[in-house]
Image 1 (cartoon, rainbow, N blue to C red):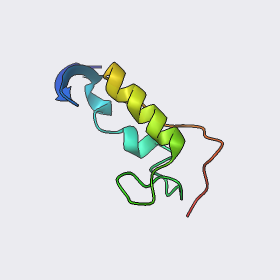
Image 2 (cartoon, one colour):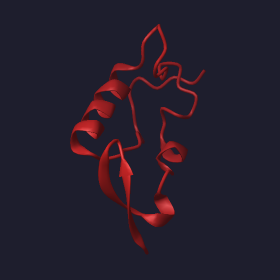
Image 3 (cartoon, rainbow, N blue to C red):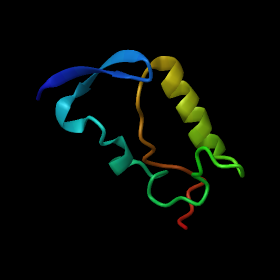
Image 4 (cartoon, rainbow, N blue to C red):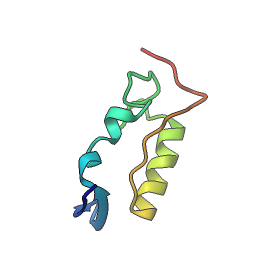
Length: 73
């Protein structure tokens, strides 16, 4: 397992090289949830917004594996 560093959201972060950029592949939000609409006029999911704010504040990336609001398009 190789750990690499790169800049994400203005910070240097560490990541397992094989997992870099894979969070969307493992995220329930990115699996056609009707509530996930980042950057749209109708607004985005409140859970996704909250997690994104935490990720920006802490300098982390986190996929959602379980969610009570998930509903497939």
